[in-house]
Length: 387
Ligand code: GDP
Ligand code: MN
Image 1 (tube, rainbow, N blue to C red):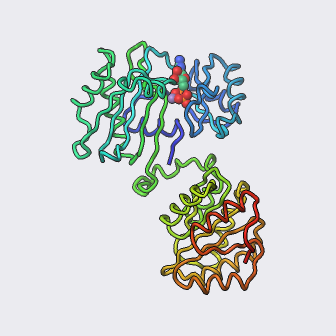
Image 2 (image 1 turned 90 degrees about the horizontal axis):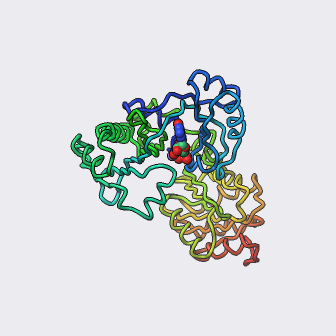
Image 3 (image 1 turned 180 degrees about the horizontal axis):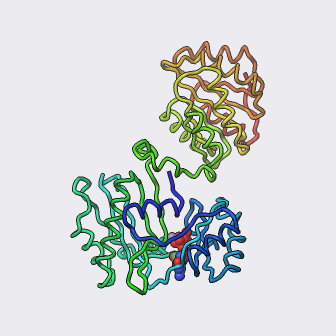
């Protein structure tokens, strides 16, 4: 679960990491009022779940009320690479002497937390990481002992932090590590971590992702999910308790079991298709569940064909077929469905589908056959007779 900058900063502040005063607003008038309270000059910052806001024009300094009005007006509603700005963060502007970078994440292959620090922070950090990887200090941490003061000082020193702010950087790294650990974050990143002319070290930006599976341990964080900016279909799926991930292709994928759905994505990709989603209908096969899943997939208008892939184990294919038929009679999908039923009672299931003679439904016996059919159908090519 990704957090907006200002939400990340709230977590930072909770753990003693220094951030600037600010307020989140959703209208131009509120932006002006907030700026008055925060104190000029201010920064007007787009709150969207994507980086590079500065380069896209979503971060602007404002010296007075008219500038806040102008920038807030321009940034609200702005589309930053597919993310529409609905919230602004109005923050008291900082003077910047240096821009550093710091992050804590999980190094999965090493099974250890990883602290990364660089004195070359700022908007070009990706380029620095690519062209001068030696300018990023990476230090793995013993998860049981945590990040010690000595290690934090070493990271700051080896990374080349200016002499007089090594303590301040070590404090920031320690607090960032604490955020990552205690909030069950998968990523806690500060770019830039600034040094002010007064030699204070402060987080000017925040990128925090929380582990959604650990949210139950943090009731105070449960309100942080950015419902507004979530994919609306993913949001509906979550409300219905269905595993759904939006992708950007045109073939809807529906299966029972996460493993099966993942292999289905692979097989469709191999057949030259582009999946539009990942949808795991889970166990069970009643018509209501099938209907919900089909409706979710079809609410993505990019979907040109759907592959319904069921492997029957405890779930019986004839029951799934009955569910499908009941659902289809009601929904009457206008895009073609390829239905692959395999496993327990698959023959009966396919017979039921054939008998029902649903328009636009193409049964398939194997996953490869199903993938090839659905790719052809999505491309508008004719395939063998439908059920
Ligand atoms: P990002 O582009 O999405 O990473 O947004 P940031 O919050 O990192 O802001 C981008 C850049 O704007 C920063 O690297 C700073 O150079 C600049 N910036 C942000 N806040 C301030 C501020 O308070 N004062 C000054 N002088 N520059 C700022
Ligand atoms: Mn940034």
